Image 1 (cartoon, one colour):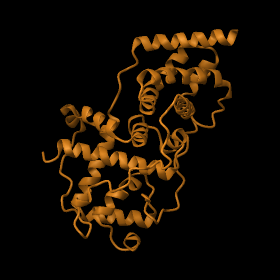
Image 2 (tube, helix red, strand yellow):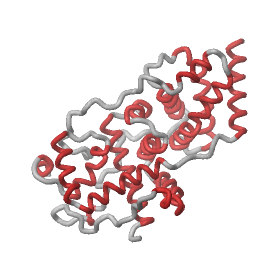
Image 3 (cartoon, helix red, strand yellow):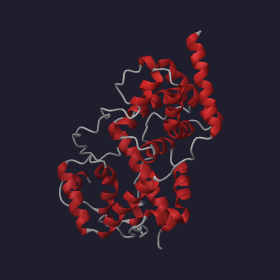
Image 4 (cartoon, helix red, strand yellow):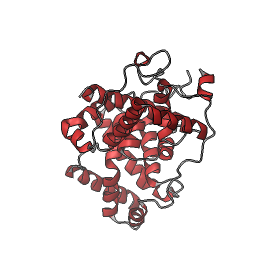
Length: 215
Length: 88
């Protein structure tokens, strides 16, 4: 099943890797042999790497090992890093490869999987108009929503997402990677990255509506 | 269905599937215009769009704890190991 409208548009150029790598100063110091620069780099990327590794590998201990292996590989390969991608993209690509060889579950051949509409078809009438419209829950202040313990609900909903959707949503929306970076790290086409993002975000929205709707 | 996509107005059921392409700025111009025209006249889809944006913002608020001190030590150790290996 095609999930992309059949009139798939010619794409505009997407965002590119920024010309200035935010890690460049730390990398320069690391290359000069500064241990502190290494620890600072680890701190910058640890959360993203740990989340991604845990998403790729169900076993926590193995995930942590893969993060360490990735850093060791990065240190060993530092001379070979030419800066064609951002350091983060390079690092996360190493991690994905390591995780895969550490025995990641075999990837499905159809990466988008999970077909079907993102909103229950029963919520629309025959003309395609809303019959059961979205229940209002958005407030003016996100803080107020978060204060209601919503972070836990989002976290739980993220865990429920199919693996590839979770990886894309986390990298994009939690870790703030660009579409371009996510495509490079997870080896996805632009279109598939968007489909996974779409399905993942739509599910999270539904989870929030289930939690907060009808208020 | 495909006729429906190409010309005329979009239905709500189509809007919810196009929304990420809209937010990612991946809709062709004509489709984007149709999307925006629909939003302008449909309070439910306007609400839906607000909810998607809020979902993205709220997901972006998730943070994990800072790196535990023992992790810092582990990585310092890892760096030293690598240096020893380099020097060997």
